[in-house]
Image (cartoon, rainbow, N blue to C red; front, side, top):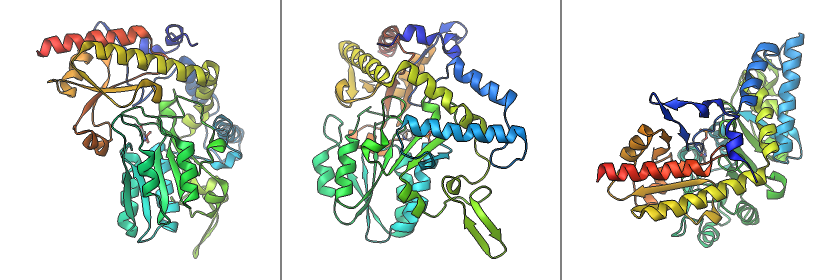
Length: 407
Ligand code: PMP
């Protein structure tokens, strides 16, 4: 088991008080996780010792940063159990990764009459790129529904799959309901129908062990800033055969082999998809996040979040006027979204913030999901390695106080 109270000491930002003198309780890791001292140190060490542009220079600093850049790629490939490190592409984040697939694979393979299958659990990052693709090509978007308890409706999924389905874009874990989707089964079913699968793993890779080879994943997207790392870098994992066949999306430095007045030839993988100067320091620091997560253990992290989510469910239910959204904690990540009778999520969040408790309110970039749930907004508490049962207690006390205040 994981000792969250001890781990919390590794996170300087969590040691402070806010609003003058209120201790901070950070329950917004689904938006962005905080960084342990080891990652902060790695970022600073990189900038003070090895920083230089990568794949360009002919000097020691550039050679060193280039070597570390490629080591980072290898560390990430090993973390998600990719067969080849050049199947790991550095992007700006999950959003950048999904847009790359939609623009590159999508424009080359999708045409009018084809279908793109999405689910109602998706974040806007896994909706808009497909809507834009549909606008460009005339392809139709189909929506897989959820069950009443907020799980993916597999029967509906199967009924929507057909020979017209060319791409399935599905989250591995909902950022609102926390629902884990059966990603392996979805991938199998989609492959049987001849479709390619894009898995949005932004809320999965930071919280559980993800094995892209076992999943037989075609494309997977995730972001460093949700896994204790810096913002500005994310990953597109793609199967070598798919990436090889895809045209580059962004054009510029690094992604070419030869350029002439007449045109250009593209570099091989992974450079083909990494045009321009990348987020050098964040990429070089990425392995320090993985080291930290590995040391804590992905199994331990998943169990810990499950325990916190279960405890939060119990305590919220005991308050009485709370509607918890989504499935039983057994079927989900450490995300608990809810509404409170007669109290708008924004008013609630504001009242909680005054008590030092940081949660999120709104549609969480998932408007179709909220519409499906019949609400326009919700409040969301999300947990990570540094959250304790005491944090949940403080959340519950703060909600009780807010309810009293507004009643
Ligand atoms: N998908 C999901 C499920 C997410 O939670 C998020 C971040 N909230 C994203 C995609 C987008 O990630 P990013 O902003 O890092 O590109």
